[in-house]
Image (cartoon, rainbow, N blue to C red; front, side, top):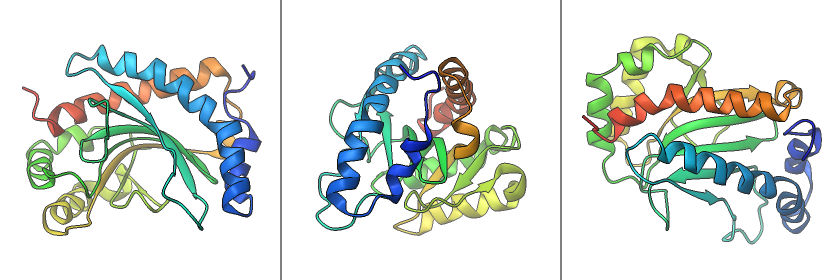
Length: 209
């Protein structure tokens, strides 16, 4: 394994022109790392005691023209499919690494999830200030919990209830310049810490008493 888990070349994959060449680099460079993370963190998340989690490495199989601009491994309590469930992701854009809890537009319980999070807003507002929220998993942009404030969080949750395509993501971004400096051990510790902070949010999302 590399002395550093993530390398500059991993992030540069998303600058490669053409679907075929980018997919080849993605499969050779990044996906083996996603499979490693998938095994490790599926076990760790399962140990939380809510459900058994399974890893899902993004295949981008439906793409025929446009190459992927990001990629990830997702974790959900289902062997087949994860998009309709609240799920965790570890992934890359060309600019940064992300570790998030995601409720995306396929989820049938967005209204209930938004209501539970609104009633328990402190589970979000008490996250470290560097944590981020976003309303769209297709875009790399996000705002910090501190910048959003309670008002911004409520707006995102209101939108989750009322807009069909609305989503809610919460987690952590790490610029590529910082990610490539982390040793294997440092990155795994960073990811574990992030999941530990996000699991109480997940408990509210799934209505775990």
